[in-house]
Image 1 (cartoon, one colour):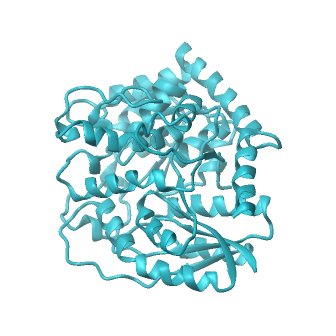
Image 2: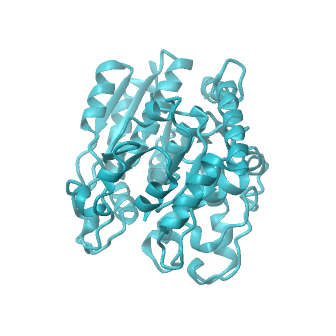
Length: 430
């Protein structure tokens, strides 16, 4: 029978794109492989995936999409996307089982690759004797943190939000507990249990596939690979196969005097049912200071919601990138050799800021005041610092070096190519 690998991303489009890029990469090493991607839907606005899926399906026949039926959730008042996502994916397990059985009738399935939110499906793979792999669309530092998360849980009875000391996790800089993702701050939160369950599933994995490259996160990769982040259990093989790349701020930007491109999205709603709501169109006049667009029209451009980020970052005029620290954006900037201003918003982004600033030294941090906002003065200082200071120059030089390292890792004989070959070759023995 033909060979197949099944990929199971969580619903948001960023996770889907990373999984598709993984599928494309696998096909470069094993063109005979058939890649099957399971698609679930969630009862909140996670970004439209239909046009993207249609384009991939039309251009890459070896990648096939399987749309799982929509599951019905119990009524909920949660405002956490993460909790809803975990609920949907757990309830989808019987549907995943049906799809795996169906695919297995015509293919030899070498593995089910899940992302962090889909770990509940590993029990289905185990039942069907299909190897289960974890895929991290975040970096090795985040993997190290969640490898170690069960150990943190076992060493204290307090919630992270109540801890006053730094978290010392092997392979990464000390972490303020408040910089951990919001769903794990409260031990009594249902999402905390979901994150803990997913973290506890790592030792059962056939392998951890990470969207990073070794020279970018050498300490985290080495420490995790040596088993120091899972001190009392098995550490699976780690495959760093990245980078996977798809082809009060206003006043601070204005006063910095620098030319800029600013992509604006709606601020989060404070409505209770925000998790179930579609996002309205953006009204720039209501979001920006009066006259801002007129005063900056000669040196700035504000776009609504979306821009061709990879193309923009690779433009020679771009000298810096203010980023929310999502890992895909980080890798895109690194591969373009663009230094960063780290301004995290949610999820694991605060952890990424720590790694970017303290470990990789590829970014300057945006620092919030006690009320959680970033002042115009902070924006002005950091933009000037990145573009004009000696520290900014050093960060720029280091980022250009990492751009070269990323190319080397992805080239013939590079660390990421070797890791991917090891992963694909391991399937021959199964």
